[in-house]
Image 1 (tube, rainbow, N blue to C red):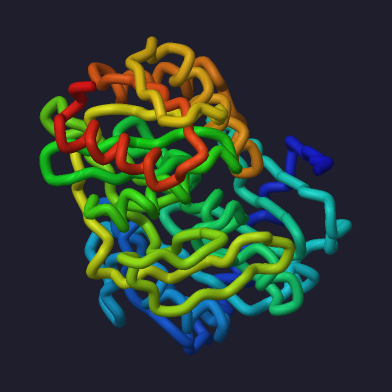
Image 2 (cartoon, rainbow, N blue to C red):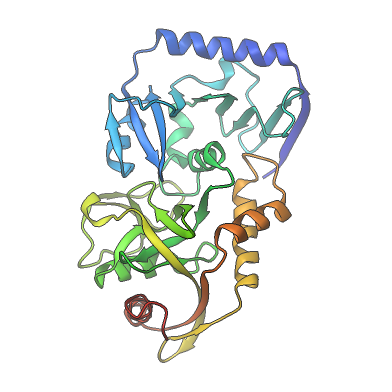
Length: 345
């Protein structure tokens, strides 16, 4: 996807856009308002988009409707096209504008697929249109909203990573890998085999007292099949997707799971799955490459700094690779056994 950068966006134009959005917010009667949690971090949302407002209470794991938590960051989702504020870009073009006052070179304005995202700390504005919104606003999928949430909450102690997480109250694992590597399916089968389920796509990680904890963000699970033992409320299929997106019953989603290991699935044709301990550095490198790529739309990435941050966060945890067999259930059972034996192969 081509990207155009304008590094000296006029500050007065930026302030004028913010003023217009603030006026809309002041006059707006949102369809939904309340606080959701992105891992451990509260985010206050006012949403003026009907179809998205209907999904917020179901899609986010922890929701406090009509409540604003002190100190929470604010996101206003407005049903207004960007053409009201800035020239509409080509559908497949992303324009990122930087203000001269932003010394960290993070974008203050992102224009993408007829969406407008503006940061003016501590408030964030997101203006979308109905026409393109449903193409990528499916919580739990690789779309603009999750990139922006990652950008809003990214700091040294909180990271949103691409991966799945399952486990129990004593031992959890982060299943990593690129899209299509089988993370979602493995985590769903682990849930069906009695493990606690955190999430299958974006996981919020933070460290407390030398332990890394994983928390869920949303309730969706992307699969090609339904599974006995996985309670779902409903499913839908986003445009362009070859998977159904299931909304999982919140009773099956767990928070605050201690992550003790990273598992990287390797596709193979073995008759039985084989799990072995491996060096963590190559795994972390792949995790960081994925993290940097995913963040590219929403910020300037620095792979070296990303590696230092993530390797520091995940310091001291074990790393395993699992060579997958033809049986998905056997692959999941192998991961479940590792969890139950707390990392003993």
